[in-house]
Image (cartoon, rainbow, N blue to C red; front, side):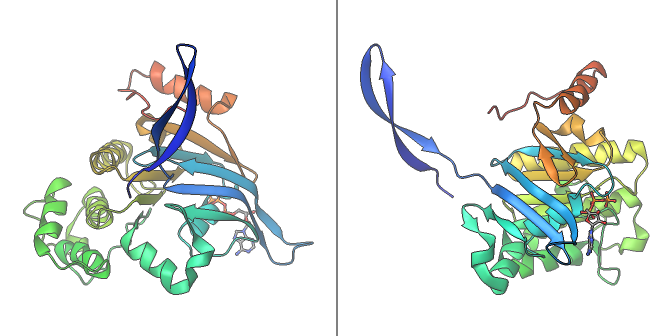
Amino acid sequence: MLPVLEKHATRDAGQTVTKEEPVTTPVIRVVDLWKIYGEETDGSMALRGANMEIARGEVLALLGRSGSGKTTLLNLLAGLDRPSRGYIEVEGRNLQSLGEKGRTLLRRTRIGFIFQFFNLIPTLSAFENVYLALELAGKTTPAQAFEALESVGLKGKEKRYPHELSGGEQQRVAIARAIVKAPALILADEPTGNLDTATGLQILELLSSRCRDLETSLLMVTHTSMACRFADRVLRMVDGVVIPEDDGEAREIRNEKIESGFPAEKPRHHR
Ligand SMILES: Nc1ncnc2c1ncn2[C@@H]1O[C@H](COP(=O)(O)OP(=O)(O)OP(=O)(O)O)[C@@H](O)[C@H]1O
């Protein structure tokens, strides 16, 4: 999507001049989002006025204890469930205004998904799993599926079925399946939850670097702080609310990351 040019009046050397500066629409904008399961009055309040934005190409880690509302937020971002109040914009479009068909199309073309248990189709080969995602996005170029598998280090393993691949390799297929359609956003739900630490770190490095190369935004939802090492920004969910990165706890995690000597890639998005 092309950036919108907006006129800004700025002061320059004592003179007021009008400049045109690019204003890029966030890939995701969450505004005062509430989700109450059951009745409004005595239902379970999973989200209580969550707000957040994700910029194009930004890599975000969202931490939170069990029950803090992470899965609920992901389901709403994917358009799989409706908010009780508030709204979500994806690339400037209100999700609710798209209707069911529009949301399905959006999921197939603009959003990629990575799951804890990989969610590959067991009767399809690695290539077929990736190609199916491409077809659903309306594209029919097998070369793209081969390229995506090569880019995650699986050249030569295209014909293997999921049960013939290790957990880390299966997650690589899932990454290829997510990136092959060049989506605006990848939603990753506990992407390392089923992997050992070393493999998990490799997967996080691969996933975040592929997203940066493609300028795809990435939201990694996780219990652990491991994903923070690869994030431009760390957010925390507490009782259905997103706590901004300048919050003390989030800062502590970033400091731990720097102290650990891990390649703390410079955050590219300053707000
Ligand atoms: N379908 C549902 N009906 C009623 N309450 C629900 C439903 N789904 C989730 N909840 C409640 O909403 C709150 C948030 O749940 P959610 O699954 O979003 O948390 P989470 O942070 O993803 O937890 P976890 O890390 O354990 O997966 C919890 O209190 C949960 O019990």
